[in-house]
Every structure is written in structure tokens, then in C-alpha cells.
Length: 114
Length: 113
Image (cartoon, rainbow over the protein chains, first blue to last red):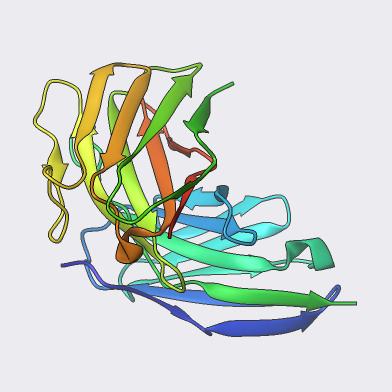
């Protein structure tokens, strides 16, 4: 069974500094990785999706994937107070076009201070 | 663009009663719909995955008897929480996928008194 773990549990960063979040997964055949953001028990906002090793940038959000190390990270460039939220890593394995089950990490609470 | 709407956004129900929530896909055909629950202080757990022309697959700890799901067409799904108790409270999220990415609704928040 897939296990997805995130670290740190919480992170406080100053406005403008880089924020880095980590996510490890247990199933090496996973091929679908997403970072989501959740503000105050609301729905999910997708930030970046990545499917192959390397880097994927979407605006101020950059995901790095290293499947051999079972690791995917998210970096937030120039974070602002409005970026304060819970950040969730989600991992799945799609085969033949069929949707795989998304397994979520426990989340990292990010607080951006002015 | 592609959107997923969920209704109702919030519900308060008495312990032992049932609550039905709906999920509407707009701008794409939802060939698969996944229902998730986020209990207080926890992450999202998959309840069940419904794929058109396939049986609905429930995850361990979730049953059709407790969470019956309907996926009658490519734009709509509903799920009912039967006989809701305190442990059923949380945010229920619908994720719908066509041929591309997964889109989530805003969620239906269930409070049980």
C-alpha cells in the first residue's frame, strides 16, 4: 500500500524567502505527482503536476521529482502572506489511461510572515 | 474551462440521519469520479472510485452500504452518507477526470450534531 509522507509538518518563512517542502512515497512505480494547496478547510487548488524526473515550474511554484530516491519536492519562490496554507503532496499510478488512486500526504502547514 | 461543482457546500445534520451530496462536471466528460473525505486534523482519504462502465470500487473501511454512490452519466455523480455519526464529519471532496487531469470541487462540509 502506498505511503506518502511530507516534511516538515509546519514551516514558517519570511516573505520573499524561498520555501521548500518535501514528500517521499513508497511505491516506486508511481508516475503521477501533484502538489495541492488548501486554505482553511476548503477545497484543493492544484499548484503543479509532474510526471517525469526533473523539474516542472508553474509560476512561483517549482516541483522536483527524483523517482529513484522516491522523492518529490516543492519550492515556493518569493512567498507572500497569501500563500499561507496547508500544502498537500498527492501521488498515484496511472496505467493504460485508467485513473489511479491518489494517495495524499498529511500536509505541511506553511505560514508566511511579513 | 473544466470545472467541478459540489453541492451543498455545507450541511449540518443530526446524528443518525443521512446526507446526500452532488458533484457536477462542467466543460468535460467525467469518465471517472473519486470521492475523498478529509476528517478533522487528517489528510484526504479515498472513499471510492467510480469509472464509467466499471463497478464502483470502495476502499478499505468504506462500504457501499454506508456511502452509496451514483454515477449515472459523464457529468454527474452523487454520494450519500447514510446514518451519519460524529466520525463521519469532515470535508467530502469530489475529484473528476476525463482524459486529462483530475479536477476537484470545493468540497461539501458535513457537520454532525
